[in-house]
Image 1 (cartoon, rainbow, N blue to C red):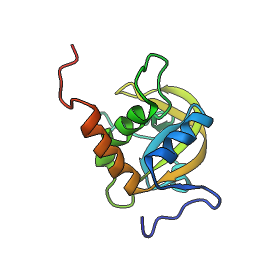
Image 2: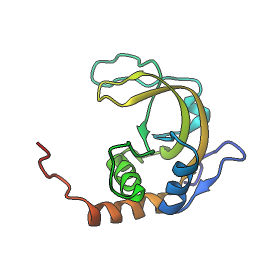
Image 3: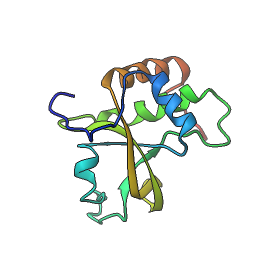
Image 4: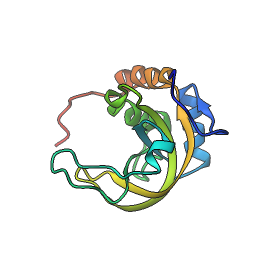
Length: 143
């Protein structure tokens, strides 16, 4: 994360356990992969297929859904792993709260009135990838 500027006072979470702990005490929490909160405060997300501007920032939930019966660590690992491919250039994962204004084209929450709560270290994302590979059956047909 060299060169990435984070807002002062925002914790930097270095492990999956730290990510899960935060999501358990501050719910709902979302993850976003971008150049960070300072850049995102001045923009909204765009649907790259249609070109449409979206009414908020595209995020993914880090707080497990009520139907989730597996450990919270599994949910967090899955969410971080599924979007780790977005960690290119100056993009990094960071956690935030906010109000859902709508849903995006992939049914993802779109947030407004955001509050950054933490950044996530690449080591935590790597740890999430390891747990994901152990705990899930990637590519399994869920129908």
